[in-house]
Length: 84
Image (cartoon, rainbow, N blue to C red; front, side):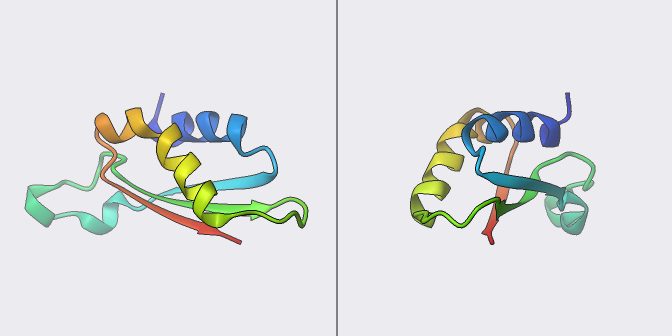
């Protein structure tokens, strides 16, 4: 299973009040330290609130980083998080 799919599966269980959009931005880093840009190592995550509930963005960031701990241990290098 590709990393994007694994991340989506993990996060949709924990962030059911959000639509989740995941993009692989690894290609933007091609050539950096001999990186070929083909692995899913640089991910951009956009969360769109489904309903207007009060959220603590810092807590959402912490939840995401905790949930994706194994992905970071296994090659995820960068995670950009945007909550809208």
